[in-house]
Structure formats: structure tokens, C-alpha cells
Amino acid sequence: MEKLLEVKDLHVAFPSKRETVRAVDGVSFEVYQGETFGLVGESGCGKSQTLRSILGLLKQPGRITGGQILYRGADIAQMNDRALQKIRGKEISMIFQEPMTSLNPVLRISTQMYEAFEDEKLSKEAKRQRALELLRLVGIPSPETRLDEYPHQFSGGMRQRAMIAIALGARPKLLLADEPTTALDVTIQDQIMNLLDQLKRELGMSIILVTHDLGVIAQMCDRVAVMYAGQVVEMTDTVTLFSRPRHPYTYGLMGSLPSEDSAGATLEAIQGSPPNLAHLPEGCPFAPRCRFACEVCHKERPNLLEVAPGHLARCHRPDVTEGFQGLIQFPDGAVREEDPSHA
Image 1: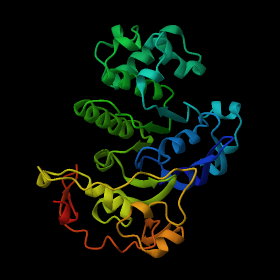
Image 2 (image 1 turned 90 degrees about the vertical axis):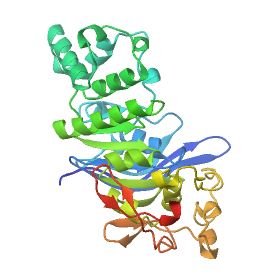
Image 3 (image 1 turned 135 degrees about the vertical axis):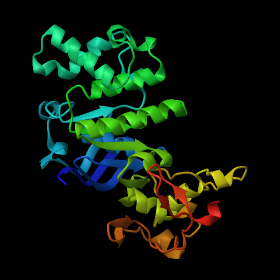
Image 4 (image 1 turned 45 degrees about the vertical axis):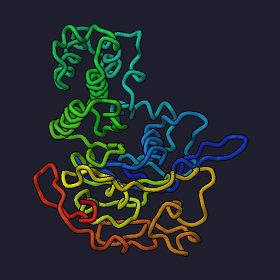
């Protein structure tokens, strides 16, 4: 497969007079043509800032302080605004987390959609027909009427579909989806996820999906990177991640998942809170919350190493999750392995 995007040792910082927050700390991953790559982790782990860095959309005072973002060999991190404008929308588009705040409330949906293909020099009627085609593609009923309405006249699910339509307006090769189902009910979440998967296959594009929901990862992603405290702590294909996680943080996330067999039981939570990114502890950032931590974990920061073919983990003790066996049902109907203690 063709390598579409490569993020290499990315660092993002938010400096202030009092301290510097290292929101992204040496993140590296690759995205290939036609795949869905997931970034998962708790709030504040650096997922969204990594995604925003790819399109140069960091909010001030945030800035990239190191690393490369290679899109088909060109380093986005070194591009000026004029060069980025040729990539935003046309090559890489983004679905933002909150459609109500991302859509302009005083502009009709049509006006906001037309901006996506403004550079194509289409006639007014051609723009309208393209916009109607996109609204039909994302499953919005009565698109002829809806196109001339305002965002407040749409439901949450409809606004999210409109955002997807706008993001697809310039037929991008890579779609960045920042928690696209946040604040939506589970029925609409499933519809949006199925829609994204369908569009990926029909349009042949790649997706980077940011979420804190492991169920969405299992449903959508080919490969996944687990993030904690601004770093990738584990990365592998989705099946391997769910069948044999090799980092205690991933293990803990799995333990917090409800299942049919755990009905009525107390879910196993990860104790403590994520660290302050401006004052990370010495050693492994996860050590204060890790039930498997030993002396070296509190003193030395682990490197991201290959613990099995194609499987990376940032842990001094990647063998502590041995014995992770049992059953988990995936959307494709295949049976995977899971720890029986979580049943």
C-alpha cells in the first residue's frame, strides 16, 4: 500500500510565562492509502492536538516545536499558510468535534458548502448540484430544502452529516475525524460511523479517527495508536490490540469496557488521574496509576519498542499482560481473545 502520511517525532508545546505544556511529545505513526488509523486515549492525552498539527490549525500559543509531518513526501510542518491552503480541503479535510460550533450559525448550509469547491470555478448552478449530491451522499433527506437552511434548523446528527459533506466537498485523499460522534446518541453514532466507513470504501480515501471510545476503534479501524500523556504508548493492528494488549494502560482501558457477561458487575476503573503535562513525573508517566509498576518504572522513562512483529509498546514490562485470554466479539463476527477476569 502507498504511504500517504508519515508523522515523525512530532512535538507540540503550549508555552506561557509560568510553564510550558508539552501536549504532544515525540509522536510517530504512518497512514496508508485506503486505511482507517485510530488514535485513542483519555481526554488531554494529545489526540486532537496531533490531528490539528497535521493541518496547521493549532490554537495560539500552541506551536510545533519539533518533528516532521510528511504528506506524500512534503513536510507540512515547514509549509507557510499559502502552501497549506493548497492542501487543506483539497488533499486533507477535517471533521471537527462540535458541529454546532464549527458551522457558522449566520450562514446558510449552502454558503458554507460552496466554499469547499470555490477554487473549481463552477457556475452557481453547478455548485448547487454538487452540494445536493454531497447531501444525498451523507444521507440528509430533502436536500433541496435543507441546503438553504441554517445550522440551528438541523438536529445534532444532521449537523454532523453536513460537516462530513463539507469535508468531502473537495474530494480529499485523507479525512481527519476528531471524535465525530461526540454528544450524539448511540443510534446516530452508529449511523455516522457506518457512513464514514461506506464513504471511505466508495471514495478510496484514508481516515485518521480520533476517539476515546474503544468500541468505535473495534468497529472502524485497521490499525490503532494508544496515546497517554502526549505519547504513543502502544501501536499495532486493531485485532492484535484487542486480543493481546502489551501496555498496562491499554490493559486498563480494556478492563473498563462493559460486556454481556459483566452485566451488574462493577467495572474496573484505572485509578488516579492523567498527569499534568507541564510537570510530568520522573520515569514512566503512567507509573503512578499502574498496578504493575516496579522501581524502574518510577525512575526511567521507557522507549517505544517492538515487542512483537508490527507491535510497539512503551513499557518496561510489556509481558505483564500475558494470559490475556477469553472471547470478544468483533463487528466482522470473528472471535478474539480477552482476559477472563473481566467477565
